[in-house]
Amino acid sequence: MISVNIPPFHEAAAAEARKRQLRLAKLPGSLGALEPLAEQIAGMTGSPAPRLRDKAVVLFAADHHIADHGLSLTNRDVTHIQVRNFLAGGAAINAFTRNAGARLSVVDVGVDYDFGDCPGLISRKVMRGARDFSRGPAMTRDEAERCLDIGIEMARAEKARGLDLVAAGEMGIGNTTPSSALIAVLTGRPVAEVTGRGSGVKAGIIRRKIELIEEGLRINRPNPADALDTLAKVGGPEIGAMAGLMLGAAELRIPIVIDGLIAAAAAAVAAGIAPAAARYFVGSHLSAEPGHRLAMEHLGVRPLLDLGLCLGEGTGAALFFPVLDAATRVLSEMKTLSELGIHVPS
Image (tube, rainbow, N blue to C red; front, side, top):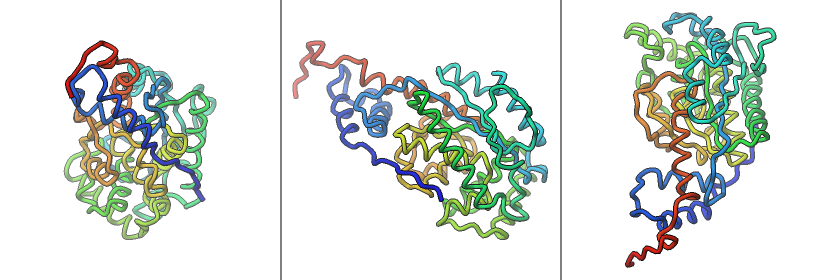
């Protein structure tokens, strides 16, 4: 049984940050959405002037046997090829984490491939790919719990390294299919409404994808009131580990930046298990996948960037890290009106 003790949002720290914003040498509200964003981070961390010095993306990788129905532009071999690319530093997420001054940790929780002795890879393999949920459960409940535990373990390990800000990334060919299934169940939305193009497939494959998800929901009957049950029946190992990372980070007062569709599905699982975790979620970008917007609305989290991204890996979240840096630096580095000797009539 997953058990996390998530502290309440620190209202006093957020209020103090809000008061400081009013004293800074600028017009009130002139930094737009950055001002409430900084206050939100203050309430999460419990510090009225938080600094996000140590940042990380923890990327979890797994395969999905439902992808064998031809739902993606590429086959499942790309999962392990890309994992090696991440470790070699040659992917978009590597470029974006370098740009943000963040580290990248890569964790194998369910890739259908034997990496052997692979330098840099964190091996936590639970299974060799999620089972085809159009024919039966993707995972057992025990396997789903193990994936969540791995994510929680990773949050604690990263905190021991000094972590201040985190995002969950992923790699898994076909994982927009279980993500759409999870979002449909946990938000109560129709499958067709939350299912998009994934890797860029054509309309006929999207229709097949919708049919397979609907078949999986009919066969498995996931319980929307039990997020762990839903994760086990129609989710996947990396999505479970991402949800666990979010739960573990929330327990440690670490702000969690939510990336695209797969991260939003994981966030819905995490919030389903522990609703208080959602107070530690920060929106980054609005994905081109339709289910992402609906999941973020369900979570009450506002994405602030809209760049048409739909790559995954944690790229949108890493791209947003410098924005959070800027928002919080204002609280600790900007002069106040009184410090500059400026008097503003009340």
